[in-house]
Length: 374
Image (cartoon, rainbow, N blue to C red; front, top):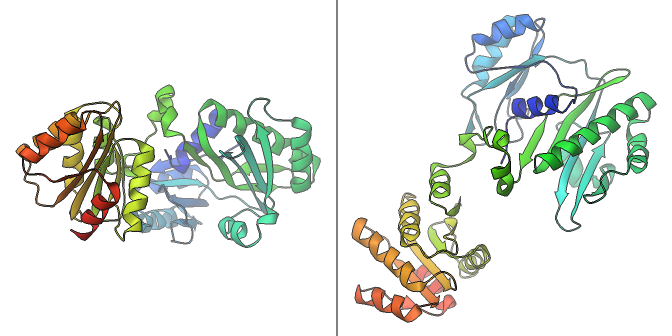
C-alpha cells in the first residue's frame, strides 16, 4: 500500500523526524492563504502515488502567493502517468545546499532490512541506480538484532562527513528504522534528505509503502489508504475475499492458490496469450466466490476468454462447478470459458458441468492452448 507525500511526512513528524510545515489543498484559490502564511516563497507539489512528478511538471516554485495560485491551478487536474492530480501540497521553499538520499527497503533474499544512502540524491536517483550503482551505499540491518550503531555511524560518516550532519543522519535513520518495523513498511525513503544550512539536514520529501498483508494490525495505516491506488474491481474483490490484481491482457484467469495462479499466467504467456488479471479464489469451497470472480472479470471489456484452472485440495471441484453454473444462470456470458478441474470431487464437478454443456479438461497445457486460440 502506498501513501501520498503529505501523509508520509505526517508519519515522519510523529516519529520525530524533521520535516517542513505543509498544507494540502484541493482548490487553487486556497493556495494563496497557505503561501501567505508560509512567507510567500513556496513550492507547489502534485500529490500522486507515482514517481516522476518533477519531470512531468508537477512540482513548481512560486515566489509569491499569486504565483502559488497560478501553479496550483495548472497542476490540479494534471495527468501524471495515468493519475489525475486532485491534491497539491504547499510547503516553504528551501535553500537547498546539497541533496542526499536515505532509504530503507526489505530484502527478502537476505531476510534483512537494507539501508541505502548516497550523497547524490535528487530527481536523478533512479538514473544513478542504473548507471552508477556503486555510488549508493547499502548497509544490511539484521532484524533480529537491530541496528549496530557503530557500524551505522561509520557508514554515514563516509556520506555526510561533518560530525553534526552525521549525528542528525544517525538519529533520522534510527527513527526511520523504528517506523519501518513498527508499521510493517516495505519501503521508507527520503529524497532529498537536504542540507538546508551548514549544519542542518531535513526531509524535504517522503515516501512510505506498507505490506498489505500486515494492514489488519494497523488501523491508523489502513485509514491512510487512497482509493486511487486500487481499481474498483480490486476493491470489490477484497470485499468478496478474492485476491485480485488487474493486468493489461485479454484472457481472464480464475485459479485457486497464488502459486498456481502465477504458474497459470506464465503458461498463458508461454503459449502466446496475455493474462487480463491475477485472481486467486483461495482455498475455501464457496461457490459464491466463483460467481463473484466471474462477475468482476467480465467487467473488463478487453476480456475475450476466461480460463478457470482449479487444482482441488481443500477446494472442492464440485463447489467450483456450482459457482460456474450459478454464474451462467445469472449472467449473460458472451465470451468462451475453458475449464480445467483436477482434485477433490473432480468427477462430480466435471459431471455437473458436462451436463450443462461445458467442456472440461484435465490437462493444463491443453486448456491453455485452447483458451489462447479461442
